[in-house]
Length: 444
Ligand code: IFM
Image 1 (cartoon, rainbow, N blue to C red):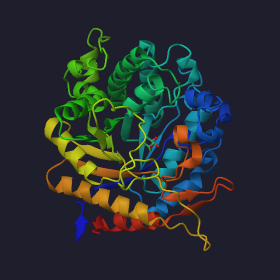
Image 2 (cartoon, helix red, strand yellow):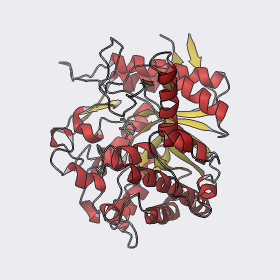
Image 3 (cartoon, protein in one colour):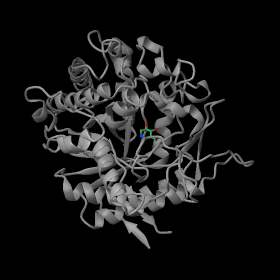
């Protein structure tokens, strides 16, 4: 049975600056924490870097053609802060800003709505050197950067996302140390969490002021937390993990306090708020973006990011993440039920599989087609049951630099040959083109 979506439902695809642009030193761009991290031996698989990545910085025009071929309504991309402000603040690099301005014009000419994410993890290294996100100053620098972007692009860009997955930026970057800048301090991670949210709170009204009529939101990662067994301990562990990964963002954005008690069980103290910080953080947003890939199965004492996946015969993607389509439904229903956000967008959903170019030069990826079909169907189910879901973005348009995994994981609708940088549409691209054209997804 086909699941139909309402007229005007937004179909998109997403990318991020460091993951696709390359051109890491072009046109006056400053160093980002990911440039520094990926150039540090041992940090990224196979020593890969984003120096070239998909070379989108030079191939953006032909990449827009790919979007046109798909019939995308919207393209979510991030802007690189150090490309525009090489020192993180102060002097603007006009060539960096011009790049994004040309990209936006190209998208609009192609009939594709630009959706900008201002921070997708590539902090200027100069700001990390001054303390990074654990420093309160970074929140104010972020708002200044948002102002530069909104002033230049706000006449044409009407959809803005302040931050992508602040949990990942704070926890993986400052606590687990497996992402840039590679720090491992609970205190720093807690401070980074607060200052990321504060940066969002200061930036959102600035964007609204300088981009008339725009919609402003923030994107969080979300995995339903399921207890591994029915034991009380596992139920408790799942609740704590939910607070640690999700509620620590959702609650203050909705005007509630941080989930202090739950965080304290893991030794986290969120006591760095000053003055009207919590009111700032709760500044009204027009939509909430949610990224979903799977659920987490949480057992007491094992609620650690990056645990090896149990060898339990469950279908998994190449990331080791369980294929669990209902997770997107559970996420949308829970957020719709418990939080007051008026509009929800799935701003990322997708899967990595070990795609290969066949002898006929084609890339057939039936597992990704099945994955997307089943997840999108579950999103449609949530919408039919009342979740205010307005749109959906596939992660990702192109295979790209998957952070600590380097170029080894392929999430794209388009395959990228990293030797020639040629793009090849996978079967999933052709399948998604039909979904967009029909505004419907055919059942299994
Ligand atoms: O590639 C990332 C993206 O940058 C943020 N969300 C998850 C994706 C897959 O890991």
